[in-house]
Structure formats: structure tokens, C-alpha cells
Length: 603
Image (cartoon, rainbow, N blue to C red; front, side, top):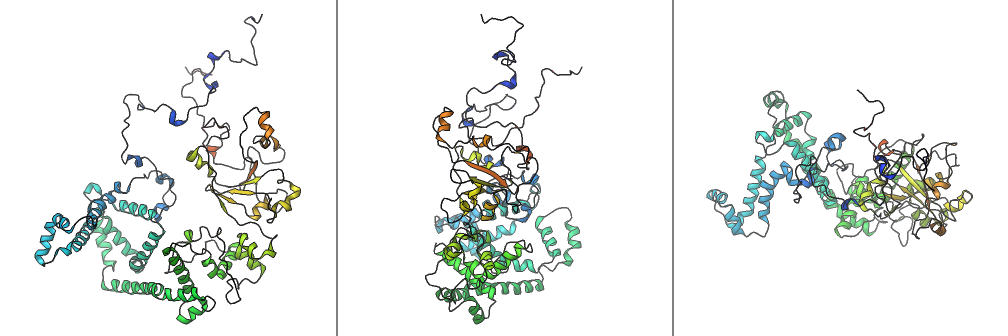
């Protein structure tokens, strides 16, 4: 009954015949693919001749990981290095660096002998020959051990010469620089502070009085290049003042000045700080600077520095707003200048010789902190006494409106919420997908729900006092989340002509006629419980619907959303279930290596 002749073909359904004749490109997975960890380990090498060894890797673990992901380099040459070179730097442990190996062998191994775990007798036994050679000159007791170790270390430092490793030198100069770079990157804030201070006191006075020729000469001596040593000595040596008495005289004078500055900070500073912190209304920084004959700015820097030092030493959280309050006039000046496009940097408090914890750490959560609240404030004491006009208020508080609303409740309505960071949502796949959150744009997410997302209610749902107000989230290019500023929330509504932002919604071309309707991708994240029954799937917990766009993007057909390798049309998902997860990196389809049949065979 169902049999038919050869002529008939079930055309629309079985275009390419039964299952077993299906083309290679039409196979669809029948069951979800196994997670990567469950797949068969690739045991053979590429040519299928030898088995791979599965011994635990030693430090080779680091060897193949390129360092291009690390963007915070400490030293300038590495910051300036082109990407192609950065990709070839490997992440190796510090002792695999030739200089690190030398340091471990010659310096650390000796310094470890200072540890109390060794008795004096052991140290003496280890270093008997040096000890005898020294004690033959002058008689001493066993208490001399530490001095002996220090002398040995000095000697070994003296023998270190940079040069070509094939020529027998322990390491090249670039090994040493790389070692320094890694070491500086690993320092915490206190270590950085001590390093800065050391640099200020010891090295900067030398650098300050060196001419470029001196630097050339030092480089030539340091790096032991075999090529042009004699030539360099002929050309440069006579122009150099390095090591002459005048040179040392100048640098000594400079070192004295710098150390005087530190003396002011460390000896006079606590006194200033005690007076000011005890009764700020009687000893404002202006009065202190007149009393001690110091620069007003210097006094304020010293106060900030001592406040932070005292807090960190006592393990108490510092008052993050202090620098902003002491330098408020400069702050306002710079905000205004930046607004008018005259000023591009960040305001720095550590420009001159007195430095403290770096700006980046200092201001990291300035915006999130609340201002210190005073119980009673009178005019002299009022830290906001210099804010006169409304423009002043606006420039000073910026987007930190929470504080603003607390202190000036009558100003509500002109203001929005404070900008705050949000934690990341935990994702089912863990760290494998975190890189996908980074992009070159700020993405803005707006809530859609029953009571928000209506044009007519715009004023109501942006009102900062309304507790059911509409929520907006912005994902920054580095992948972190923050709340939106008032201006961004207002720019969300397209019909405001003043908003010069460009918006782009996923799968939506930019333009009028080719913009599809909203429903098709709103339905994709169902809000209603009955959508689950309609689709005959189990009830699942899903987030509230968010309608998302990005602003600050470029215009154009696809609004240049992502670099080209991300723009392939068909994407396959890397994980099949749960089906809310899309492919992080989309696989580029490549042409098959061998064509079985060619349309035009070459003969």
C-alpha cells in the first residue's frame, strides 16, 4: 500500500535519501556532547608513533603559557613592548630566570644561613676557611658570623657581571631587567611604598645629576657587550663625570635635600598630625603651614600621608575621603577643567618628593565609601565651607549622590543614585566563560517588568526616591558591573534628542526599516509561568527579563559590536545543556582540506 515506484521521491522531506547516505556536513548531535574533561585523553603524539608521557610536569607547566594576558607591567620597556613580542614572553618561575638562578645560588643561599635555625657552630663549620683567612688578620669571637656572611654576600654581588651567557657570564642584562619587572609586579602596596622611598633616597639623587652620556657609559660598562668596548672607552669615557669628586659632591647635596624632606615628613609630620587630628577647627592646615613655615600643599600631603599610615599600622580602615576633602578646591578646579576639556590627567597628590600609597589604591573605592559624618559641625570646622554655589556642589559630589542626598535632603529630585560596583553573577560553567564578559564597550542593561519599562512613566521610574524605580546595570569593558549614572539612565530613552549615544540591540540592525519587532527576542526569555507549560518543559527558575543595549558604540550596520573574529553568522554552542549558554568563541568554518568531488576537476 505504501510502496511506490522508483520515480517517486519524497522530495521535501528526504532530499538526500535515507540516514546512512547522509553527507558529512549534515550530522546533528543526537545527544549532548561530553564535557571536555570526559573526552578521551589524547594519548598519542600527532604522528601517532609515540605515546605521550603523563609524568607530572615540572616547571615546564609555566613554560608554554604566554604572558600576553598580563597587562600591568611594572617597568616601562615592557609596557612599550609590541603585542607580538609580548606573546612570546613565557611565564616561568623566578628561579628559572638566569639572574634568578644566580641570585638563588650566590645570595639567597648565603642569606638563608642567617636564619636562627642554624647554630653559630654550624655556620662556622660551613665557612671555616673564610673565617680562618679573616681571623688571621684580626682576632675575633664567634659573634662575627653575621658580619662574615654580609662580607661574603658583598663580595659575590661585586663579582656579578652581565653579558652573553655563551661567553661565560651568568646572565644578560635583560634577564636582570625581566627579573626586576616580575619582582616589582609582585610587591604589595607596602612593598611598593618602601621601594619608592628607597628609590627616592638613594637612586634619584644619582640619576638627577647624571648626564645622558653618563647613562650611556654605565650601560656600556654594565652590559659587557664585547663589540665596541674599546671604541666606547675612547669616545665616551673622557666626557663622563661619573665617579669624580664633583659628581659625588652634587649627588650628596641632593641626597641631603631629599632626606631633609623625609625628615620633615617623619619627624615634624606626627606633630602636625597630632595637632590637626586633635582639634581640626583650631589647627586647620592653613594655620599649621604658617606656624611651621611650610608650604600649604606640603602640609596637606603630610596630613594625608600620616592619616593613612596610622590607619594601616593600626589595621583600621582609613577615611577614604580625606584627600578629597583637604584638596577640595583643587578637586573642583580639576573637575571643571576636565569638563571643559582643558585637562586630561588624573589629579595626583604624589607629584613631588613626598609620596604615599599610590592613587590607584587610594581612590579605588572612593566612590563607594560614605563621607565621614560629624556629630556637630560649626562654621570653622565645616569641611564643606568652600562649597558656595550649586555648581560647586555638583562638581564636588560628582555622581556620589547617596552622600549628597543624605546631607542635603532638599536637593533630592535633581540627583540620582551613587555609582556602585556589583558582584559578578556566578555562572554555571565557572571560569571558562569569564573572559567572554570583556568587550570594548560599556553595555547597559535595563530592567523590563510589570511596573517598569513604560515610556509614560519615565519621570516616575527614574525618580531616585521611588523605591520601585527601574534598575539599570552597566557592564564595563573589563567585565565588572556597576550601576548606571543618572545621565546614562536618562539617555536610555531613545526619544530624547540630546542623548548623542548610539544604541544597539542584539541581532538588530541599525536603521528604521530593517529593525525587527521586539517580541521575537523578548519571548526568548519568558517572564510568565505559563510559558513553561506552553513549551512543555519543566518549571525552571529564570531571571527577570532584561532588555539590553550597548551605548557608546559606533554606528553602522552592525554597530561594530565586536572585532571581526567574533562576527561569524552561525555559532555553535560549546555546551549543549543548559541551553542558556552560548558559544564563547565562535568557530570559524574552514574550507575542507580535500574535496571528494570538484565541480571543475583539474586534469
